[in-house]
Length: 176
Image 1 (cartoon, rainbow, N blue to C red):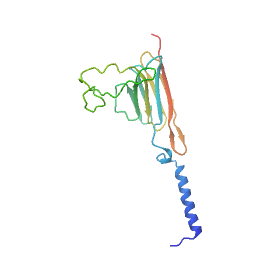
Image 2 (spheres, rainbow, N blue to C red):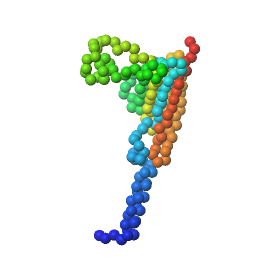
Image 3 (cartoon, rainbow, N blue to C red):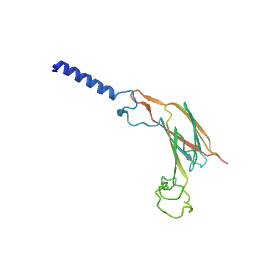
Image 4 (cartoon, rainbow, N blue to C red):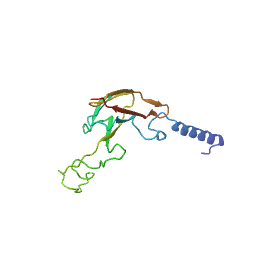
Protein backbone atom coordinates (compact mmCIF):
# COMPACT_ATOMS: atom_id res chain seq x y z
CA UNK A 1 0.00 0.00 0.00
CA UNK A 2 1.45 3.29 -1.10
CA UNK A 3 0.74 6.33 1.05
CA UNK A 4 0.66 9.86 -0.28
CA UNK A 5 2.63 12.63 1.39
CA UNK A 6 -0.54 14.04 2.93
CA UNK A 7 -1.41 10.65 4.44
CA UNK A 8 2.09 10.31 5.89
CA UNK A 9 1.91 13.81 7.36
CA UNK A 10 -1.51 13.02 8.85
CA UNK A 11 -0.23 9.79 10.43
CA UNK A 12 2.84 11.59 11.80
CA UNK A 13 0.65 14.41 13.11
CA UNK A 14 -1.65 11.96 14.89
CA UNK A 15 1.36 10.09 16.32
CA UNK A 16 2.89 13.34 17.59
CA UNK A 17 -0.41 14.39 19.16
CA UNK A 18 -0.69 11.02 20.90
CA UNK A 19 2.87 11.32 22.21
CA UNK A 20 2.19 14.81 23.57
CA UNK A 21 -1.04 13.64 25.16
CA UNK A 22 0.79 10.83 26.92
CA UNK A 23 3.25 13.34 28.42
CA UNK A 24 0.43 15.37 29.89
CA UNK A 25 -1.73 12.44 30.85
CA UNK A 26 -3.96 12.73 33.89
CA UNK A 27 -3.10 9.12 34.67
CA UNK A 28 -0.74 9.01 37.70
CA UNK A 29 0.72 5.71 36.41
CA UNK A 30 2.18 7.54 33.42
CA UNK A 31 5.98 7.23 33.39
CA UNK A 32 6.23 10.99 32.88
CA UNK A 33 4.75 11.44 36.37
CA UNK A 34 7.45 9.43 38.12
CA UNK A 35 7.08 6.52 40.51
CA UNK A 36 4.17 6.27 42.97
CA UNK A 37 4.67 8.33 46.12
CA UNK A 38 2.89 8.92 49.42
CA UNK A 39 0.38 11.73 49.68
CA UNK A 40 2.18 13.21 52.70
CA UNK A 41 5.67 12.88 54.15
CA UNK A 42 5.66 13.65 57.88
CA UNK A 43 8.70 14.47 60.01
CA UNK A 44 8.35 14.64 63.79
CA UNK A 45 10.98 16.06 66.11
CA UNK A 46 10.91 17.56 69.61
CA UNK A 47 12.07 20.70 71.40
CA UNK A 48 14.02 20.52 73.51
CA UNK A 49 15.85 17.25 72.99
CA UNK A 50 14.74 13.94 71.61
CA UNK A 51 11.36 12.59 70.57
CA UNK A 52 9.87 10.76 73.57
CA UNK A 53 9.71 6.96 73.49
CA UNK A 54 5.94 7.04 74.11
CA UNK A 55 5.14 9.12 71.02
CA UNK A 56 1.87 8.10 69.37
CA UNK A 57 0.88 9.07 65.84
CA UNK A 58 -2.74 8.57 64.82
CA UNK A 59 -3.91 8.98 61.23
CA UNK A 60 -7.58 9.30 60.31
CA UNK A 61 -8.28 9.19 56.57
CA UNK A 62 -11.09 8.27 54.17
CA UNK A 63 -10.36 4.56 54.47
CA UNK A 64 -10.12 4.32 58.26
CA UNK A 65 -7.69 4.95 61.10
CA UNK A 66 -4.18 3.72 61.93
CA UNK A 67 -1.94 4.33 64.94
CA UNK A 68 1.86 4.09 65.16
CA UNK A 69 3.82 3.60 68.37
CA UNK A 70 7.58 3.05 68.58
CA UNK A 71 8.16 -0.71 68.73
CA UNK A 72 4.45 -1.30 68.09
CA UNK A 73 2.25 -2.46 65.21
CA UNK A 74 4.28 -3.40 62.12
CA UNK A 75 1.26 -4.28 59.95
CA UNK A 76 0.10 -0.77 59.13
CA UNK A 77 -0.84 -0.20 55.49
CA UNK A 78 -1.21 3.59 55.13
CA UNK A 79 0.82 5.09 58.00
CA UNK A 80 4.39 3.86 57.47
CA UNK A 81 6.80 5.25 60.08
CA UNK A 82 10.42 4.84 61.10
CA UNK A 83 11.94 6.11 64.34
CA UNK A 84 15.49 7.27 63.71
CA UNK A 85 17.84 7.04 66.61
CA UNK A 86 21.11 8.80 67.12
CA UNK A 87 22.76 11.67 68.82
CA UNK A 88 20.87 14.91 68.47
CA UNK A 89 23.71 16.47 66.48
CA UNK A 90 22.83 14.40 63.45
CA UNK A 91 24.93 11.24 63.94
CA UNK A 92 22.87 8.08 63.57
CA UNK A 93 23.30 5.03 65.76
CA UNK A 94 23.80 1.75 63.85
CA UNK A 95 20.28 0.41 63.34
CA UNK A 96 21.33 -2.70 61.41
CA UNK A 97 21.05 -5.04 64.41
CA UNK A 98 18.00 -7.26 64.65
CA UNK A 99 16.43 -8.56 67.86
CA UNK A 100 18.83 -11.52 68.14
CA UNK A 101 21.82 -9.20 68.32
CA UNK A 102 23.28 -10.34 64.99
CA UNK A 103 24.14 -7.85 62.31
CA UNK A 104 21.33 -7.55 59.73
CA UNK A 105 19.97 -11.01 60.49
CA UNK A 106 22.54 -12.70 58.27
CA UNK A 107 23.26 -15.43 60.83
CA UNK A 108 26.80 -14.34 61.52
CA UNK A 109 27.81 -14.60 65.16
CA UNK A 110 28.62 -11.24 66.69
CA UNK A 111 28.57 -12.61 70.22
CA UNK A 112 25.97 -14.24 72.44
CA UNK A 113 22.39 -13.42 71.45
CA UNK A 114 21.47 -12.70 75.08
CA UNK A 115 24.17 -10.05 75.31
CA UNK A 116 22.54 -6.61 75.54
CA UNK A 117 22.88 -4.50 72.42
CA UNK A 118 23.50 -1.38 74.46
CA UNK A 119 21.57 1.83 74.43
CA UNK A 120 20.36 2.49 70.87
CA UNK A 121 20.31 6.20 71.65
CA UNK A 122 17.49 8.70 71.75
CA UNK A 123 14.93 9.06 69.00
CA UNK A 124 16.18 12.04 67.01
CA UNK A 125 13.13 12.06 64.70
CA UNK A 126 10.28 9.98 63.34
CA UNK A 127 9.63 9.92 59.61
CA UNK A 128 6.29 8.74 58.22
CA UNK A 129 4.90 8.25 54.75
CA UNK A 130 1.12 8.69 54.65
CA UNK A 131 -0.42 6.85 51.69
CA UNK A 132 -3.91 8.35 52.10
CA UNK A 133 -4.75 9.26 48.48
CA UNK A 134 -6.60 12.28 49.85
CA UNK A 135 -7.22 14.43 52.90
CA UNK A 136 -6.37 13.18 56.38
CA UNK A 137 -6.02 14.24 60.00
CA UNK A 138 -2.82 13.39 61.82
CA UNK A 139 -2.47 13.65 65.60
CA UNK A 140 0.80 13.36 67.50
CA UNK A 141 0.94 12.97 71.27
CA UNK A 142 3.30 11.99 74.07
CA UNK A 143 3.25 12.27 77.84
CA UNK A 144 4.56 15.65 79.08
CA UNK A 145 4.39 17.16 75.58
CA UNK A 146 1.80 19.38 73.95
CA UNK A 147 -0.23 17.34 71.48
CA UNK A 148 -0.59 18.50 67.90
CA UNK A 149 -3.40 17.63 65.50
CA UNK A 150 -3.53 18.80 61.90
CA UNK A 151 -5.98 18.41 59.07
CA UNK A 152 -4.02 17.80 55.88
CA UNK A 153 -5.46 18.61 52.47
CA UNK A 154 -4.07 16.77 49.47
CA UNK A 155 -3.06 18.84 46.46
CA UNK A 156 -3.60 17.70 42.92
CA UNK A 157 -1.47 18.19 39.85
CA UNK A 158 -3.81 18.24 36.84
CA UNK A 159 -1.41 16.06 34.88
CA UNK A 160 -0.14 13.54 37.43
CA UNK A 161 -2.60 13.42 40.31
CA UNK A 162 -1.61 13.80 43.94
CA UNK A 163 1.41 15.92 44.86
CA UNK A 164 3.51 14.75 47.81
CA UNK A 165 3.24 17.30 50.61
CA UNK A 166 5.92 17.64 53.31
CA UNK A 167 4.66 18.21 56.86
CA UNK A 168 6.76 18.83 59.96
CA UNK A 169 5.50 18.63 63.53
CA UNK A 170 7.68 19.63 66.46
CA UNK A 171 6.60 18.35 69.86
CA UNK A 172 7.10 20.91 72.62
CA UNK A 173 7.59 19.74 76.19
CA UNK A 174 5.44 21.16 78.98
CA UNK A 175 6.95 22.11 82.34
CA UNK A 176 6.62 19.47 85.07
